[in-house]
Length: 607
Image: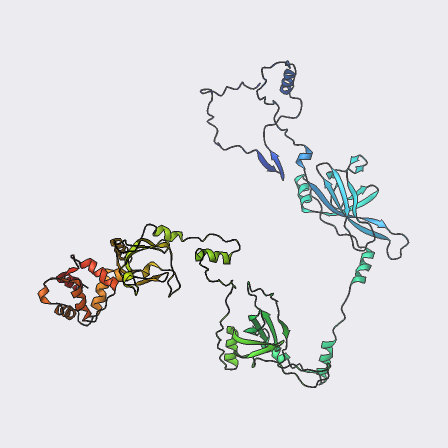
């Protein structure tokens, strides 16, 4: 009797000191080539504990509701020690190779016929299947010889113990001789402790021998070499003139790059590779495959053959006695052309082996020609001029696409310059005096290159001020491109809808915006302006500064008008733009366009 198990409660469990392996137990294993499951099992036979448990469960009242609604674990959940045959040998098949002899009556060529068979025995249900491989033109309905079923014998049915190599099997009155088996079958018998004998040869069949000799074709002997040998031995014969060229130049190929200018409507430059074989003076031309050209490429434009220089026109074959002249390596120089099928193939390059061969054998230096290959030109629809309705981007979208989409803005440019606005004071350039006296404020938005113009309201001018031009993008009439931020400098002229505006000044924010980007606005960068002034006195900088002071009236003192300084440097051929003059005044201005000459002198001296 087994000891009663303790409940799994704290304090009732004890650690086994002899246990050394704490890994999870493995249930599935492979034993003798079969997948098995190692779990709990009961010994086969009538266990008294199982019988008692079954009797106790059968005596219970079926109306007992104490266990209703609870999962009930089966008592006998174990797996038997020996698995059933249908599970253990599932899809296991023993395959044997054999034959049987069939008597042939009233035939002088053969007395019997050997018919080969394949015997397959299924281990899961002990069924046997026999098939005969099909032989061409045998005249016998071959294929399935015995269907799959349990074949009877004297004391039962055939089992795997009845099979073996070099054994005779009797099935339905026919005796089958087993000569061999496959590798799986041999391993199965070895696992069962049976060592099968070696394979056996099939017996000779007189009909098969006769059929093999009839179908066997032996080529007649080639007497050409024997005849040539006898002729040369007797002092005659026909010597092979091309043998020396073949031996010396075998596998030597001159490769050239050629092109053909197709003058058809959808033609163009087509490139080929031409190979010249020195062994027999033959030429082949291969077409180079180009992607997305719209042309069907062929592997060979010209198969390997001798190419004549000029075609000989004859009214009938074999009526012309004129000998053809073929191209050779002297005609295939870079810059020359080869005529193939009426196409003039121009040679413009060759590989390195060809250049070395010409240099070493003929002393000719092959120099490659530069060929301008046509690019991938995609035809586009012509863009009509803008009709004035809407923006030009919307009109282009209607031309390019059948279903137009809204133009996509440059989001990176918008994020970088969203809050920047450049404001300039400007005046209208006109021949009318009243228009020249009008004042305007031009606003440029770097986020989308748009421009907006306001007119300053002046009392008693007779002109209503306010918005002059709506905000939108304008094109430069000289470059036909949209105005960019680098074009807005003091002194520049901006043409907007046939109105010309002269930029005269800008606000403090615009000055700082330009100074923060010296690479885009070099005329607003203070150090760059100083270097430009001192570049005119490169020979002697100290004397240049002295000459500037000499051109200024000493009676004015240290604080002088900015205009006097500009006149002084202008006498020394220094030319500054309006933007440079405004940026320089912004640094030196003491108020009322007055600068300190000593400060200006020290600034120029440090450059």
